[in-house]
Image (cartoon, rainbow, N blue to C red; front, top):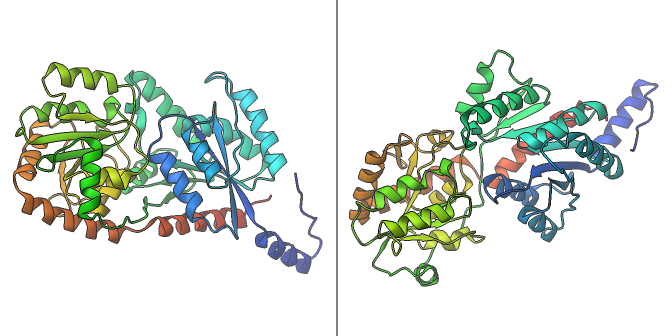
Length: 396
């Protein structure tokens, strides 16, 4: 571990501070392996846009390496695994983390998820480096057992009190943390940003439809995300049975509900209209095949894929959950429904499927809206500003 000289005079202090702040700072990003989704794409977005003259990213996946680690290495980002034999193996994980920090002279830890918060929180305080924890949503409903979800939610809230800053992505989430009897010491609202995709031309649309086996005359309702109960894709399948026969659903992603959804679609006679295509790396190519984008989630943050669909010019139907209401003004930039409201979801889908002009109008307005929200580069500059502030006041 590199130390700094004792500051004996005011002039030496200033000189040391200038030298220290001019160094490249090494930021450690911690995330548990799992389905490749929004948090992983957010991390890669930061890696892409970080000012490398100021910051050097370093990824520390927990438990085992996955697609995020592979993608990070392909970008030239160093990766150091922190193994965990079980959820309770925190002590050995802490020892690995301390060794990693000392070996690589890490200046700040940025965590993504409760497991990384559990491992990193006490280490950051012990070593004396700043800790930023990103929280995209209140995901206690991610757990199959509501009591388990609530228990881990409470544990995470206790951990977040120790963070130097909690990064949230929506005003409802900021308001929630500010309302707690013991809120985090600093809450920083930094909305998600994306790299705006190039316009989809007819040739790309044709190729995408051929690739996914969809006829040109079909109306495609698309969505990208983890195929888990929390995403509400069972609601979308229910609606499909009542939509015109030319409507099909195209889902990209993997998860525990994939097999069940496929079997349910087969039993309902909808197998040829309900396409589960697995993990999608090129989201623009997937979205090129779609006419409507749907996010029927029961709980959510602000999905990166939803922002990308808006930027592509697709009309949006989404649940009014998490930070989606920050992005979409219902009736203006898209259509919002209450979670579990199958009837409203079906009615909006029916109207958009039947009226291409309305789809085009909502798509144009969605594109304008997401451009107002901000780009991935703007988001990254905001994150860097947070790093700057915390590092300026760090003792390390």
